[in-house]
Length: 500
Ligand code: 4AD
Ligand code: MG
Image (cartoon, rainbow, N blue to C red; front, top):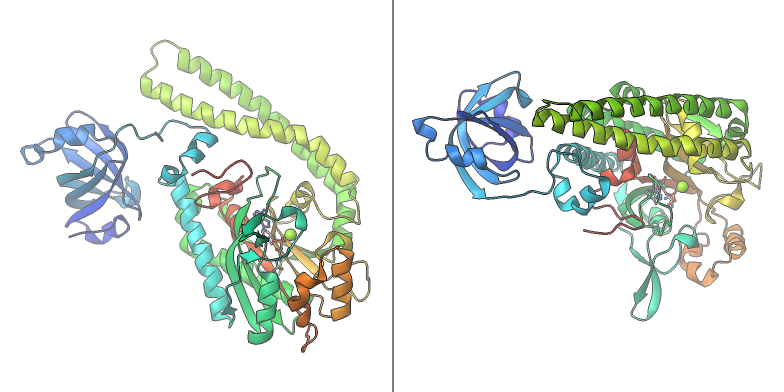
């Protein structure tokens, strides 16, 4: 009977057939231990030398990593093994051999791994992350579907900018320039006047010339939009929505989160209400002593860790070159040293940057946008996500509704994920007054002809409305606790990376 690894525990003492790939192998001459993965999980398959296994025992001992195999055997309960079971093999069939698989259990650099991304996500860590991504996307759809939102697919070829003109990718559209969509928002706004509550969900593109841990050039964004809504309604929706995503991942992926070393208690704190502050309040915090103290504290801790790692590396180096060290010990030390070197390289960059970030915070321009390091500071100050509202109008997109009490500000909101992860949501109430919007279009030196259709909404039954965009990859990075966004998408596209 064919069986998937995730269901093995329901077949104790029965004979099953598994179809998968060889993840790892070791043998003791008389027994070969094969770790098999089949996409649903991993399990240990044991091939003992006996007349029954004579036909394939030697082959099993020599199988290359990632060979595809079909294995039949009896399922045994074994608490010590992955998944609490193992399989006593009675038959083994090689479907496709694999020799010299490039990604071995030994350490590899990031560049090497991402050049082999088509194979890399067979690795365990990537498998855990992409399973969580799947569920985040599933919950995004489920949330809006169960709350009465209609899905509206918006175009990817767009005639004009939806966000800043600096990050447009231009494409030759039969001799005319068009742009890859930076957002579906302007289109989804039009649909919200037809359906009330709508969302679009698709890939979006930004020519981000920065190589940061937060930026992709192609990323997935979900954008709900609601009619008859003001800023507070947008904030309430974002809060409920993000809470639902985190709860769902906690419900379905505890094992995956644990494997990734994620601190689960910090995710359990993501309950309503989230924190809320205005941009002016954020500016005060950034310019004040609290931000400086936080960064001083980081500088001290990180510098101490740098010294600690350097010592550890020396020790391990000495141990691995000592006499009589076995090869497996050398391999283990080499893997540990590779991890430490990677951590060290990251930390050294961070330590070098902290004084600059202190300077940026101290001199934060109250009329400007929050930079990456500013977001990090604000989002470190609380266990909860923080909504930052009412940014200066000059640093935000043309479509945002100006604030009635303070016309220099707009009714917008960014949601900063805690623990330093920063912005995962950007949204706003939209300018619903025709003349005010037209004036903003002129101010931004955009061509009003490009936005005729968008202005029409403000001519034919305009209503207050608003929405937001949530970036899937930044959300997954936060939930999984990843330092870099590149692992959250199957094939990352970033400045300098578009292969394979
Ligand atoms: O803040 P942004 O630019 O907002 C918009 O595009 C609005 N039109 C959304 C709306 O109101 N309907 O982007 C929204 C989110 C960010 O908070 C972030 O999570 C993600 O999209 N994002 C990126 N993710 C990865 N790489 C990039 N280069 C990103 N740029 C934005
Ligand atoms: Mg934004």
